[in-house]
Amino acid sequence: MTTLIQQQRPATDAASHHNSLGGVARAAFDAVMKPFEIARVLPPRCYTDPDFHRFEVEKVLTREWIYAGRVDQVANPGDYFTLRRFDETVIIMRDHKGGIKAFSAACRHRGYPVASGAGNCGKKGFVCPYHGWRYRTDGTLAAAPYMQEGYSPEGESLPEFAVDVWQGFVFFNFDRDAEPLSPRLKTLDAVLEPFGLASMKCSTMREKAWPGNWKATLDNFTEAYHQPYVHPTTFEPMAPARKGIYEDVDGPYNLFWLPAPDGGSIDTFFDPVPGLPERHANAFIVVNVFPMFHMLIDPCSVVILDMDVHSVDRLTARWDILVTEASYDRPDFAAVRDAYTAALVPTWDEDELACETVRQGQSSRFAEQGNYSWMEKSVHQFHTWLAERYTAQA
Image 1: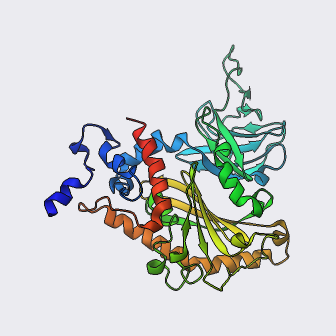
Image 2: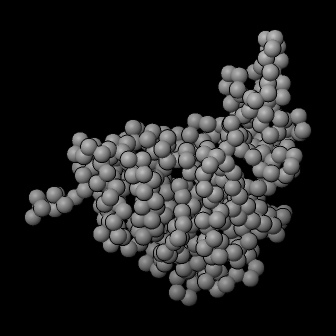
Image 3: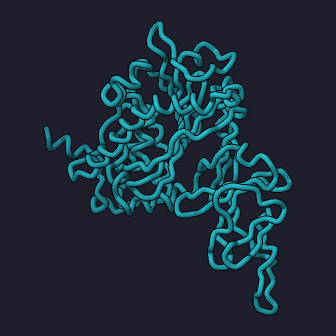
C-alpha cells in the first residue's frame, strides 16, 4: 500500500520529468490545478529553491500587478513617491495633466536613481543627483549637461510602466501591455462597496524584516485553518476558524469571511463605517488580490500587508491601516492606531514564527505536496492562479 501511495504522488523532482519549470516538473503543477477536493498544494521547491524564485520573478511577478500605495500619496501635480520592488526602484507620480504615472528611477546615463523617498518635483521634473540629467514629468529627457557636440536628448526617456487604480489603491505593472486589473475585480467591488475604501485614509502601523518565503506568508494569511493552533488565545477567540465562509471567485483574488462568535461582535478600536450591512458589521473579511496584496477588513478599518520581496527566503513586511476620514481626523488617531497595532503584534509575531518554521519543513528532502482542508479553499485558488502562470511558460 505504501508503494502504491508513493506512485500516485505527483513528481516534483526536475529529473523526473523533461518538462521542467524553474526546476519543478509540470506534473506537480498539474496536481495543483485539479479540482479542489483532490488537488495538491504547491511543491515544496516553489518555496525554497533560489532558482525557482528567479524563474518566478522573471516570468510571473514582474508581469503582474504590484501594489504601490494610495492615490492620496500623489494628490497634487508633481507629487511622487518611490518604492523598491524586485531590484527595481519605481517612481509613482502625478503628472501635470492629472494622470498617475510609474517610471523606472534609473537614469538613462549610468543608472543612478533620479528620485528617492517622496516629495513634489514641481514642473521641473527630476534631476539626477549624479550628473545632472533632467527628466520632465512625462519621463522624457529634457537636458544632459556637458555632453559631446551633436548629442541630442530627444528620444531618451525613463522607462514607463503600466498603472491601474482600484478602490484608491495604486498598482503598477512592469509590462506596459498588461491587461488592466480593475475590470477583473468587479464582483469584489460589489462586496466591498459598503466600506467606501476609495475615500479612506491610510497610515503606517509597522514595518519589519520578515523571514520566510513570500508565498508561505500569503498562504498563512489566506486561511483560518491555522488559527486554533497558532493563535489559540489571540485571534481565534475573536473570529473562530470553524465559522469561516470561503467564497467562489471569478477573478485574480480570493475572499473569505470570519464571522464573530455566536451572539458576539467584532471588537473595534475606531468608530465603525456608517451604514454597514449586518453581515459586514459582524465579521472580518480577508481579501487577497494576486499575486501579493492582502487586506484584513473589519467594521471600522482595513489592515493592509505589503511585501517587498528580497529573495526566496527574505522580505520586508509593512502593515498599513485604512480608516474613515472621521476616524483619521480624530485628535487621538495616532494613539488609537498605536493601541490597535499593539493589540495585533502578538498575532503577527505568531504568524512570523509559523512562516519561518514552515519553510524549515519545506526544505526537508522528505517534504511533499499535501492535500487541502476545506478551510484552504482560498489557498487553492491562489495556488491555482500561480500554477496556471507557471505552466504558461512551458
